[in-house]
Image (cartoon, rainbow, N blue to C red; front, side, top):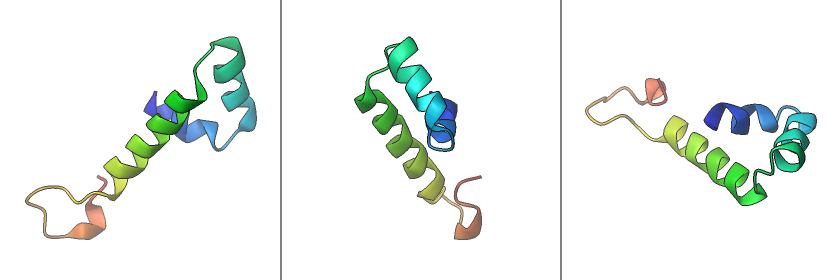
Length: 55
C-alpha cells in the first residue's frame, strides 16, 4: 500500500483507480501517505548521520 500511496500523489489517475475501481477508502490512502512520510523522515535508531534517516 505504501507504493500505491507514493505513486497515487504522482498520478491522480492511480488515486481514482484505487478509490473507485478497488474501493480503497480515501482515509486508507491518506494513512498510507502519512505512514510513508513518517518512515522516510524519522531518524534510524543508532544512526547519528541523519542524512540517511530514510534509507
